[in-house]
Image (tube, rainbow, N blue to C red):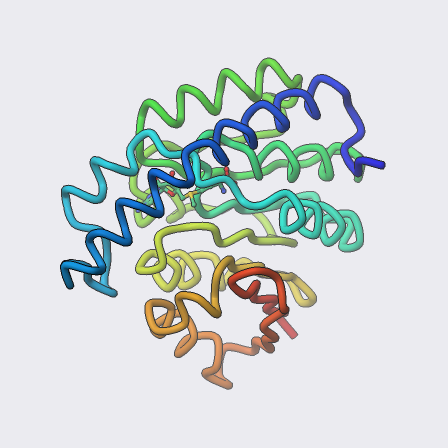
Length: 222
Ligand SMILES: C[S@@+](CC[C@H](N)C(=O)[O-])C[C@H]1O[C@@H](n2cnc3c(N)ncnc32)[C@H](O)[C@@H]1O
């Protein structure tokens, strides 16, 4: 049984997940070839990789998105920040959970204009546009202002952006807030600046890597 409460939203999610999964062999092939040529950096995508990724959904896997949905419900979250929106697949799950909590906002972030436009079309089609504040542009600018305490954060972003995003969001986390970050086992080294912040006792965070595929970090603001 699906966790999602609305058939129109479920239909949009299913279509986008299928589109994302269909792109995966091409994406794996691209990065495998570049890795084989020893041509990748742990510190960010270069111009060629950015161009390649400009139309890739890279949607959060369904089971991870459902886990985020459960956490948002459990926290009774009304203010959620999504770091990395792409075509808005995880955003739809988060908005569905916030709506089930009685309403609120999901702040999304996306710097590819075509992805942001596609996401907005899906939000309208699924009937959740009024719950989503999609901020277009580089998140290091667009997350400078966050109004009110944040209950939940999904960190699903190119890894080098995880630390700058966390530094901007951290002052707004309410006690008990949860941050979920994707692929922290696979990309542990690339996440090293993020982990340095998370593991600094001065920042009041506790973390556990959950055994989802690729590792899924669950960080709590204690
Ligand atoms: C992994 S995808 C997000 C997938 C999305 N959460 C989902 O489940 O559908 C990460 C997205 O972050 C965007 N992005 C990367 N760096 C960014 C930045 N500095 N500011 C805003 N968006 C960025 C990329 O264009 C990409 O679409």
